Image 1 (tube, rainbow, N blue to C red):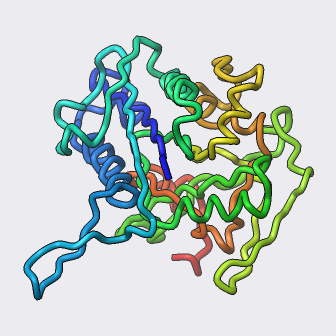
Image 2: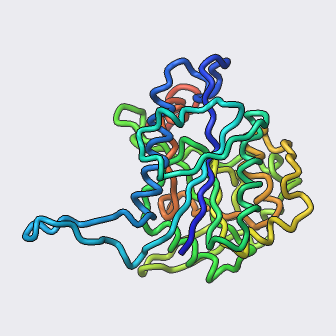
Length: 290
């Protein structure tokens, strides 16, 4: 399987510090991007081996899920950390642009459209997202096989901390229905059920379809690229970052996420603890949840 990953990466330490990409200390941002790229290569790339101790040699591993992957990191106006990235340069390609930083996700869409018919999956990630599931694309294929290409499954984004009020928190819970009502009708096929490995899984139309990423198969990408709203740079869903990641797919597909009871069926880690740290402060938590 051929997979194209596009990553929107930006870092400007002289910014206002509102976002992690604008804070003085570059190390967390560098760690996040390093983990993002490394996880993609380690999980889905060809460079996977097992050490044969008896022969003091390596043998190929996970060949049954062998993929050909390309990673394109999109940057703008020279504000990036790619020269400091401690990974082999062959791990990724650099696509430089001059767009406004908050619109960088749309430049990733342009790269995806330019590569139509060349890949089986077309993916977008913000630069602080880390995958850990080697069966991620198998799950996506299973979902669309049973649900159809008009249904898109989004991962649940989470953070972890050894010292937080909880060890793990999913950070994209429901928004008020009015936040997405003009972009989607969640009553259309409100819930889907499926069974995998003898386990029943429930999926619901997402009141918060945002995950900072999306993963489309070739048919889905081609369909989206034909829509009149594709690359219109509309930023009316929350803000530019959220719109670039989510508005287009929300207008085009019925977006689902696995329900809280099965949240980890399809998930992706958000680097750091910026959301998790809100629990116990701005976000209340039941005492039994501590």
